[in-house]
Length: 307
Image (cartoon, rainbow, N blue to C red; front, top):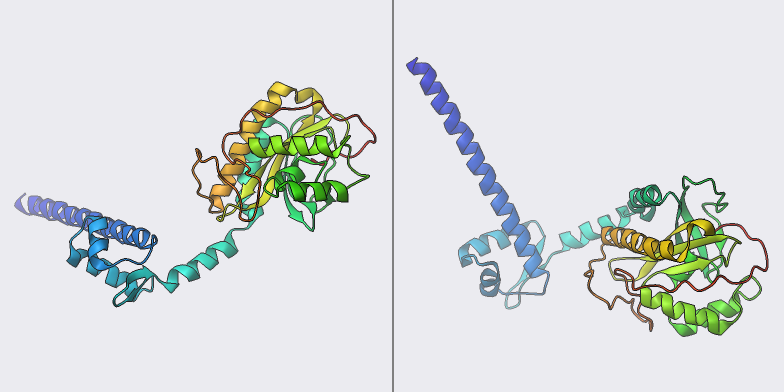
């Protein structure tokens, strides 16, 4: 009996020791990560780093030295600690591994599931919209877009979403370049809609690319805040009245934001100033303001559903 109790006591002591070591290891890991995050704000001396972390100088020095040894930090006498080359190496690896279609797929599938409509993913390619992915909807509607095809900017929801940050001079150039394949009645009308879309952070196709087909689209941003892609939900006009368009705009923008976050975009949801560099028009990438779905343009030709 005495031996049994002794063995049980030893087992409990061993488990307690393992648990304590585990907690200590996790604490050390989190402290090391905190060091990296503070140094990411700019070069910093040991004393200031310790103060920012709320740790002693000796503990901070031990953590920082270990990170310097592993090249996660660099140390320059007289200047202090800065981010090291290892982080740059890892950053390039992450960038190479962040394939847009792979990152977006689960989000596109979820959006198609909750809307029952067709979802597209596209990018701007030589001033045209290149379709990268398509998730068919559950409704009995034929949306004949194809992965890999190119479509106009001005008449598609994806196209408008992709150029929300371009500014009015660029918008006018797109409009003039696509003369003859668009359905807008005038440049002034199209420009007015683009201003509305840029303010709302999403764009519409109101039967401009095919009779009786509408869509809602929103931009996807990269780590630098630049629009690198867009997504859209397309359906028959009978399922896309003004009320549903407004409701879908929130779902589409929210999905685009989630994908953007996975690509490294971190601007806060309440920040209304998201704009890419060298752009004159701010495309608000947060919950959209109420978008105004104007009446659809008169049908001039029958095109395929490619929004």
